[in-house]
Structures are given as C-alpha cells and as structure tokens.
Length: 250
Image 1: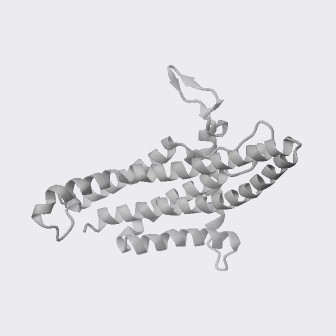
Image 2 (image 1 turned 120 degrees about the vertical axis):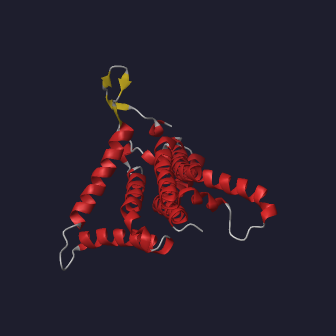
Image 3 (image 1 turned 120 degrees about the horizontal axis):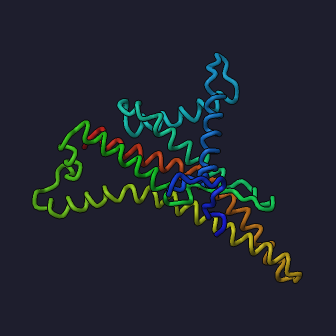
C-alpha cells in the first residue's frame, strides 16, 4: 500500500500548523500544470488550427455538448466549472498510471485514490448545486423532494426517500471515483507481485503463474485506461445532472 501513502517532500511548519508539501500536493500541482500547458497551447485561435488547438477545442466542445444536453442553454455559464472537474480528474487519473516504479525509489501517486480529494471535489459540486438551487428558487427549491403527481397520502414516504437520495449524492460521487481508482491500482499491484514471485521462483509452475499474471496485468492496464477516462466523464455527467435539478426545477 506504499503507493497510497501521503509523504512530506518539503517539510514546512508555521507554528503548530504543518503545511509541508506532500507527494499528493505535488502530483496535484503537476496535474494543474499539465492542464494549464494543454489549454495554453490550445488557445492560439488560429484560423487553420493545428493538432494541439484541435485537441483543446475538442475537449472543450465535448464538455459544452454535455452541458447543452443535460442542462440546456442556461447551463452555459457552468461549462468552465465542469471542464475543470473533468480535466483535473482525467489528468490526475492518467498520471497515477505512469510506470515510474521502474526507477528505484520512484512511484506514481494517484490523487483521486484518496477519499479526501474525491470528497472535496464532491463537496464543491454539491455546494454549487445547493447555492444555485436556493439562489434561483428560494424555499421553493424544497419542492424538488416532492415529485409531480405524487398522491398526498404517499408524501410521508416519498419525501424522506427523496431527501436521503439527494443527500447521498456527494457520497456516491466521492466513493465511486475513490473506489474505482484505488481498487484498480491494488489489482495491478497484486498481479505485479505474482509476476515477480513467479518468474523469480525458478520453477515451471512459477513461470506459468508469472506468465498468466503478466497477461492479466496487460488486460487490467488497458481496462484502467478506460476507467480513468470513464470516471472523469461520469463525475462531470452526474454533476451536470445535479445542476440541472437546481436550475430547471422539476
């Protein structure tokens, strides 16, 4: 589990407060740097766009289409927020798959494999939903917990269910991303240990186990690449749907 350990890289204290630069913070800064570089290269606004500009416009257009479909014209102002969520999660997920462990003393760190990070992202999204909902609709926002057409005698049952399902949203956002990234990395670590121990055993059985484990690692690695992109998309998608509930109150 060493790959998930948060360790200080630059110890720093102000009084009794520990504000050391950790490996988690360093990898998040690297994530922001890559996103900034990607967007800087894609904002040239050339009449005939190059590959870099086309890639940046493609990602922004993808999120813009997501907003149009799930929120509508009023969701245009939330495109930067959803793009930031999607880009941060996507890049952080992919950085965690870099094979840096081949260098002694190095290993990639996946920020999104920690619940503190995914939880903060979920709280930001959920807080925005609440702020927008009450700002636009006031106390009428509570009508979200009363689906249209619900018989009055069903309200004592439906309202608590709707409230619980609404409050569970940030936990489901955070847990889904956290579990997906952590479990995938653990699975690759387990099969990696099978490869090392199998090939190092010197026996035919061990070699067979190592070979099969290697094939599994290749398959799991390809699946992890898909999950990295899928989890970023799902997080942005669900956030847009929750914002739609706050903006277009049903």
